[in-house]
Image 1: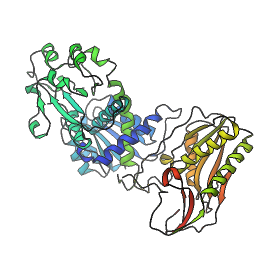
Image 2 (image 1 turned 135 degrees about the vertical axis):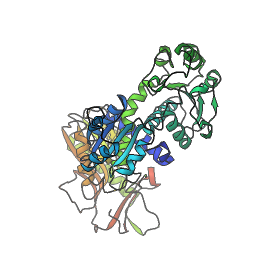
Image 3 (image 1 turned 90 degrees about the vertical axis):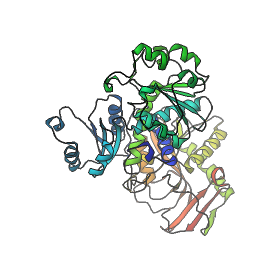
Image 4 (image 1 turned 45 degrees about the vertical axis):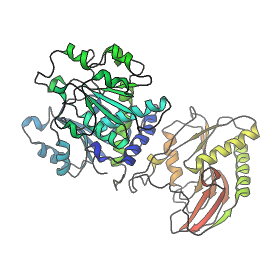
Length: 311
Length: 192
């Protein structure tokens, strides 16, 4: 595999290999010397045209722990703010001999387009409302950990409810595509105003009844209400949204035994998730962050570890 | 993407047995005694097997040492994939398990592998160890030394030294993985 642009780029064998290698990578976190030499001499540029803390930082740490040279470029303070086009910016950096770009961009399809321009390998770290494949991988990684901890293995037959602002979410699309490969059954829960167009073609059940969906979900994945992408008018008030689609204390209590909570972060406490749920014993939120570095190390290793790039 | 383990037995190719099961058992028993003798007992001893077959050999040596000394010896696994010098030149390799039993600082680490050939695996293992701690000493125990070193590496404890041609393939078969115990040589044109 040359690029990771979409969760659909991964077949079952490669997805599982990424998750398996991530398990070994996570051990590095507890070592005295947090360094593996696998990507020595490779240069990875994290180029972020949109704000991000956890994704950018975890990609940077992942690259450094694998001994790659990682460089961060943010749109602010770069030539982009002088009006340079995306293509010119990427070709300029590419001409410096970069091995890989980790790119986040507010436009859907940006990573795909960049992959067509540059010689370097491209990892999509979020393109608009389209995809965020490494987030889906780390969600799957955390879920798999949780399933194993309760003595069950594999995604087959597991019900994963993805709840909330599906319209503005790139995480949901990548999760749906990845679970199609891994075998989990995704149920989409959202108010009708926050459903993306074409959601009926995704092959997942869609409902606006959160209480019904929560009763048999093994994973409840809450999505952030992306107020910065909303021009307004998607729901009356935050309080009303929380009542219909928030993971309240009452809904936390209604989850089935052994079910767990995911949230890609950053959380709006009191809107889509109550503090009780965010900090609950079955909340995987911090495991997701911890797994984020390991999963991104594994992705970088799979893409850049070999000159043949085979996977 | 998961590459075949480099020492997976290849069936259907002609090979002859050079060490049979009982001989292999005797070699391991002798190695266990030698390790204890060189270390003057099992104090501070940590056996680290290199996947795949080194792990099983380390377990067997540990069991033998425990039997002789009457107490268990620390044992672990050291995967060297990330430290290989040919990582880039090959398709992406799957990564094995590394499990270190506690701290290895000031311990005497005995690396255990099945076949010593070019010495590159052991060089990678020494690099990997450096990132995990600072053992007082590192020793090397191999079941088979087949010669043809490409780096200045020598084993401290050797089960059998076997004369080979560079293009012959030496395979260690272990009952845990392969159903029986044996060392075979085949002329497969492979590199091992």
